[in-house]
Length: 232
Image 1 (cartoon, rainbow, N blue to C red):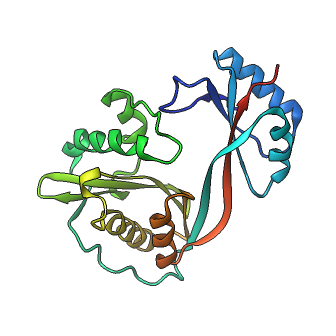
Image 2: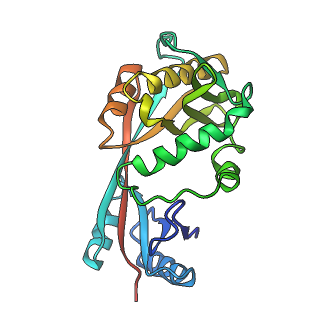
């Protein structure tokens, strides 16, 4: 069982865990492990395909704090995306933009619904999980001259791709940056023979959900995030 502090929210009294079935023993074991980490509560991830998990936890004081719509694109069947419409590069070509991407990340992570308390780690720590592990050729960066405006990357497993975090500088939002990045990602997936692309977006991010729909993504299920006290 993988029970760990919340990335970027380590200062909160919760540890993170996935529960894929209504198993009270698993919840109690997760609670024990959370207390071993010095946490008094759990942030439990599940999906609307297992509503019995919610039914198990709600009587123990848990409530749903976030919802993420998981959508999938059939890459081969999807139409060719329109051109990005603005200059893009990749981290493979512009590794020097790393510090600028960190600045954008520091703005964007706390701007996510339900994650306003995020505290970003120092650059070298963030780079170890937010930058270096990802395929550099599929790590797209929107630029204006030598200035980064936003970024988004793909994680690839076999012929399946997964959209990682997409971040846009506050000053550049509303200018089609995220749309340009996602079009480039779909084009890359087609060129590299991926069968599917999946993305997860918080339900309050209406513009991103609408963009997914325009590009041909179809909702599959919803991830649910609950918070509550660890078992006694």
